[in-house]
Image (tube, rainbow, N blue to C red; front, side):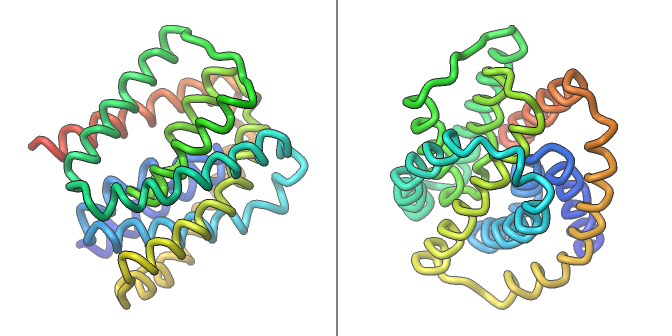
Amino acid sequence: MEIFLFFIIIFVASVLQASTGFGFSILATPFLLLLFQPAEAIQINLILSLFISLSLMGRVSKDIDKGILKRLVLGSTLGLPIGMIIFLFIDIEWLKIAIGLMVLVLTILMMLQFRLHQTSGRDLGVGSMSGALTTSIGMPGPPLLLYFSGTDTEKKKLRGTTLAFYLFIYVISLLIQMIFAGTTKTVWISSGAAIPIAILGIFAGQILFKWVSQRVFQIFTYIILLFTGLYLLVESLW
């Protein structure tokens, strides 16, 4: 039963990642934390997210905003070590509660048409937050998604830029996790078994991307964020 649930999680999360440029870690991580130890769940998420990002780069490279990407990468170099310190010294349940509250509050602001102007300083800040969340809980997506939604970024640029950023941040985060938290056979066996499922999800997500309008894309974004925030709170508190 756990194997079946694991494969369902990977498939659905892969579809989201391929069709939107985000979604794998946001959807998969909370559920993987129910099946694996925290470090294992985060590392499986990082490995599979890296695989998916690599698989999609050829299709999205023309949509990357290189200026924003450089600032996100620069900002993340500050956030990555901070996130690892948080992972090592703060109780994972409190961390999930804090992230759940943050996601819910910021998503509600976006739904109420709260808008941001994109600036270089904010790009750096969002990159730093994303880096910290990647090494602490394996979820770089919420800050990026909320920021890009708030600035009404076109969906192709959002998908291309976030996927390119993920390539950098997942590699560095995985190395940091393995050095400071160690790794296990379970991580690599589970990741290897899930790759064929992820490939099927990528294929389905590419088809879905062609049929999703900008408005539907935005609504879908809000639903995913609200679900993630509520799930993290409920699972942690009860």
